[in-house]
Length: 258
Image (cartoon, rainbow, N blue to C red; front, side):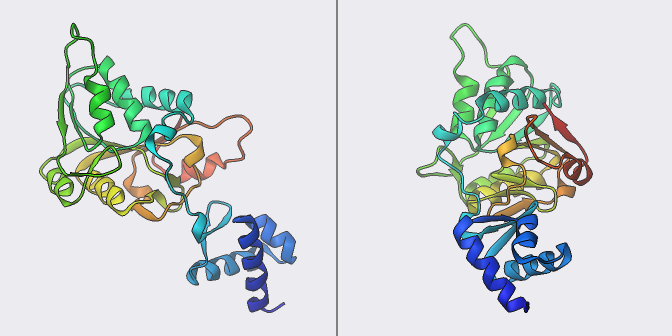
């Protein structure tokens, strides 16, 4: 079978299913893994598919974030456990960046249980969660909201936020991406969010990625941190998961499961 015919058949399947594993491509076309791999690379080069861990997805199915109020209800228990694990990596006196994500919003609530941090964030929800203590409670952190434009999403964004980030040198950036992949690293769907996260990575000594299982193997539109840029990924994997844990342990300096 000529490659052009194979590509046409794979595209037809992809249009129908939106996502194909390498195994499925091999079985449907009765080809070797190496041939399937070459065809997948070619489809990505043509712009009709995006490689992800274990196969390909149609470009119009590249991961997009749901609104924050919906994400806050998804995997809430797992995100809480990830946030509590992240706190173990922090020490009093540190300066940290938080981006605007559902898991970092939950982390902001957990940060109220410790003290002595300088917290820089563009997340309005994180600031609210940090400061909604009772009148009798004191805020034990210095909290800095990075100024910028606010539109429909509960966060500041734009060039002003980037400029503000580059005024600071942080000890740790704690980020919640749309997807984390052992080959491609951390990615987000929106350009401005990716640029903010990238700036936070550049201005931090360490980068921690907080990602529940649904984000593992996902590649969104814009990459902002390669695996070598990431010091630790904190995630969860349930017993029924088919995720290749070894791939993540090999790709990242630390892959911590909760």
